[in-house]
Image (cartoon, rainbow, N blue to C red; front, side, top):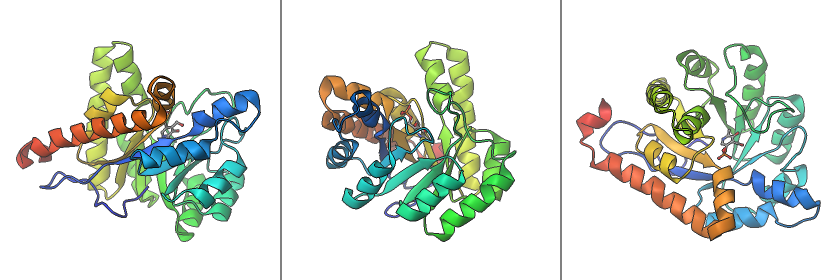
Length: 272
Ligand code: PXP
């Protein structure tokens, strides 16, 4: 979501703070496995905020496989931090966003058959579909980001659409690292670095998400242009072992360590 308390990232003297958005979808996945009300994603959101999260993110999918409409309504009523609604650019979801007025909306591609959001939006091909949705959301005061791959043509298209922010899909980088494909990971990392810089130079606020864990969150927090990370599955999985509050605190510490690496880097090196 677009910064309110922090200034956008830059290669200059004082790197911006980096926000932690916690995606609570998979708390709802667990709840829905039994069809009851436990565990409650709203309670998880409150706990995450108490432990240091800056925002809460929830993806209301067309098939409602995890988060449901009433979760969004309750999050808006009960949460005292910004809500970032992940949504497909459909009429149904646009109406839902305009009704509930979250602080931010992240437009994502959505396929019923996918296990998770597999790739970024093709904003080049979908310019005409996305433009009116972005317009309506922005006019309603909702801060829009576009979930895209770190590709030059997608980033330039996002800037042409006048979206205030992008979220870079970093899943391919995280997967390559996890699977020990070092060359692929290095290539993906170069794309992320270049893409973040290009987006920042074009005036876009830059977020990142998908597949992040403590290590990758620390690494990416050392990129000055990135001002928000959205993280879900790893945190909910770790919470099984150490509790959600502790997981969020460790993630916050990892991101702060990454930012500290950046702060220690001479300004000239940061701008390179
Ligand atoms: N950002 C976006 C736009 C997403 O679609 C997702 C997955 O729902 C995430 C971040 C979080 O990804 P993960 O659950 O892998 O941390």
